[in-house]
Image 1 (cartoon, helix red, strand yellow):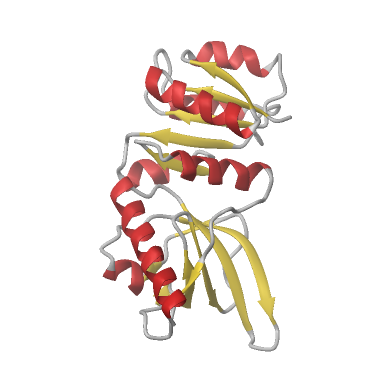
Image 2 (image 1 turned 180 degrees about the vertical axis):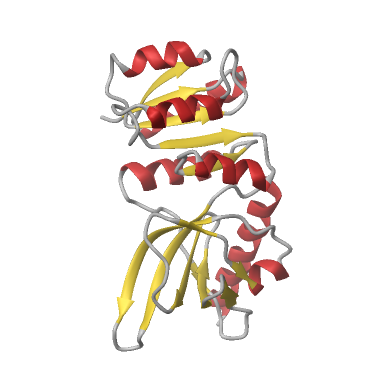
Length: 230
């Protein structure tokens, strides 16, 4: 049984998250006050923290900084959940040690996927392969090729150069074509293909806005329809 601490002062968001975690079989510990949450960390083993930014007495980002300075809790995985949707806020949270950033209003399915990906390593979203006709090229400045995409993640290939667990800003033509604002991508897995002399990367989008999530969802559905009709 995994314990998840929710630090959120919005009653409706707290209710949704508590219901979702109970449904998934996790044990939620819910707090509105950061100082009460800090006290709880010394009493119960917590496996993941879902952290809001706007909180009373202490901001979520300050809570995160305090957590990462603690020798006892510095490795505690944290997912920020906030209505702050500027790219600079996403980058700040990642810089301070957050593993992921979910922009409100929350999508329960996205939240479920990201929680389970960190706690169990299971990704329940199918990455849809792109056809040869779609724009694949990307750069960071390495030459990369987008291979597939889902609402929460993507698969791409290229030469050796990216590190697992790190975040990168990668621009892909397919995302530009969908008019999706580029957000950081975390490398979750790396698979070497010695025969092709390339590396296959599995990544996760961090901080996609609700509108961009819908664009990707519709795009993936269109790919699935094309695949079925082929």
